[in-house]
Image (cartoon, rainbow, N blue to C red; front, top):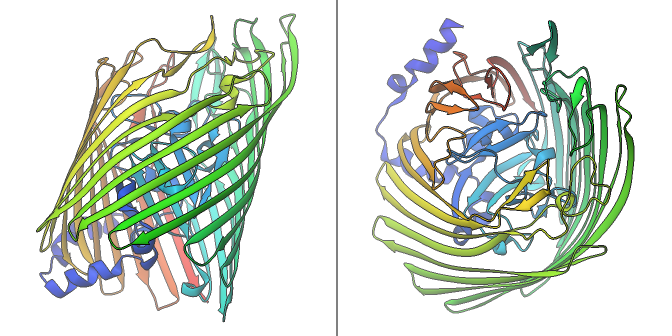
Length: 629
């Protein structure tokens, strides 16, 4: 362990070489797919290339979210991965859009399927793009302000296969494998994953009895694509089962319960001549949640219950058509999509000590129509102007009134020698989740069919300076929000807040590239809201160091978050240190170690009415074995 840490800490001294040719080659290292797929006009981008993912020994999507500038990674009381903005609590789920290639991982019940896919195993992912301050017009789908795009590996670049195993000191085990082949105009890629992830247990005592707080999870992930000429067929299936962690009881004393969730999808893409593209997709998802707590679970204003089971089921059909027209300095993207989103819920809520029981079973559906256009004018080789708009029409099957929403965006990208300037202003909205709008039984929560969508006016500006080995970027983002949705369990249930609020985020990035294999970056960011709320750290920084020595890849990561007070608890500043080392025995066989939260001083999350804060990331050592065939 000491030797492992020594190698990681000494790596800056061992590998700081001055080589201009290596700098140029480092740009070529960026995945060819990321060069093709990234959309500068979509917003402020963070890209994690294939080499980044491999050198960091990334296992799951939350490993990347943990180091996403501008956000804190956290987990909710019921063991779901979530994001926080500095000073604020969890980000509204429907504002986060997750894509695998061009497939939007949507949800009828919750608006976004991020709550299922947040810990997705990503061995089959080539690179990741995260767009902040986006409108989603460029991606031709539902609106969001944070777009996470995961692009899968392709058969043409993966001829053959790979198997990867990793395990940790808690007894966790994960197995990934894929195989790919390309012959002429026909190619296929198939991937499978099995995982069983164990986490540190915590305990809570109530009336002299101790309760175990368990957050283990397990599941599998399957993906395949078949490509023939201009046709691409994709199939995906993700299943996870997880324990309830703190649960939903009023005293956080769970005695069982778990989440069983799956999401299956089928996506067909056809590319025609003249830049016309057609997409058809079908999704089927289930979210089955059980809570058990003998000391009482509060739902709406009903008597306390002990046994709580609810199951959300989604079916989504969508068709997307878009066409890009380019002539000289002008480019116009025109598109439309239709989605049919079915939503159904059933559940039981039973108490052994109170005279209360209820069974719910209800359904609804949404027809969503959208028209969108984006115009880009390349004034010259250094100046680009972007204007876009999108009209969404919501027509519900029952109870909820139809409504329209308009999204508009203006942008400018300007290059002046070594400087790049980007500025965007977006007038948008965040869709309201179905479960917040429709629940005729008002059990276990009160819905409100009269809710308005949350609206935001978002402005972003960045300066990016590149000279030789130095990259410096400064970003400022400010949004004004109205009609935010809050929950009042004792009164109306979900309601629109009468108060508007604003939020400002600042980010400063410095990146230094020693040579092809050695680079350093530090990202500083902070956030502030006009309500003087401090629900999470205000300041944070992420330091990364990538090095290569002979057959060794060495990676260091330090995540700092400032002190904060929340729910009556005072949390000290946190320092989450992660380091990894990988040995390439030969071209096909690699062995690695990755230590996470090594000094057990990482970010801790405070929870309401809970006596102590709990680390978001465990102290772990992972063993990694990879073989190409």
